[in-house]
Image (tube, one colour):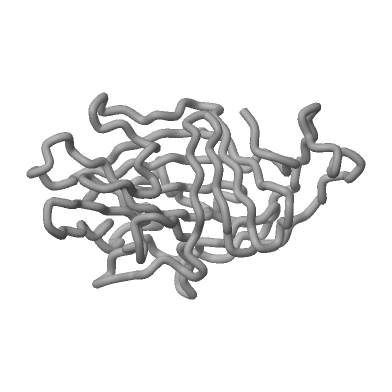
Length: 231
């Protein structure tokens, strides 16, 4: 039996006027704390600003709240809510359309991002129909396809990282039905997964009168510390 069997339903659907938005992670069972952690990798590039070229990237950045997210391949930038994702009636429901959020809870294995994160980091954000939302660019409903490909990069600046960025690379793409997401081992795994990050939103149908029934899920792997976001 998968460790996350019996999880709650995924993602509340917000309805107001003709505008739809949804976003948020699954809520699987908690798991034991992992016994191992990842070792940070670091990178520098020739495009690094002069102010940071003489500084070695930190070998360790402690876990802390994400503050900014950049995905260069699609020109996406996002800010974050200050606290945990809001939960409404058992469903994760970010407080607004224009910011993402990180989800942690005392009875869940999710962790905040850092070089030594010992299990999955979960980031949620809305995708909307009728108005812009923070994760709109992560999925193209018109083409029924993800906008990113394997190996594309994402960068997180956190409260503890200062001017440095945690770098992640796409490892897997999914668009499961909402009622299947909570128990999807290909997304959540069956054991602790150090260095893994998952972004979750919803797939908005092209017909504005249809309900959103699928999630847009991207799996990422921690790939090091960077002086700046770049392709």
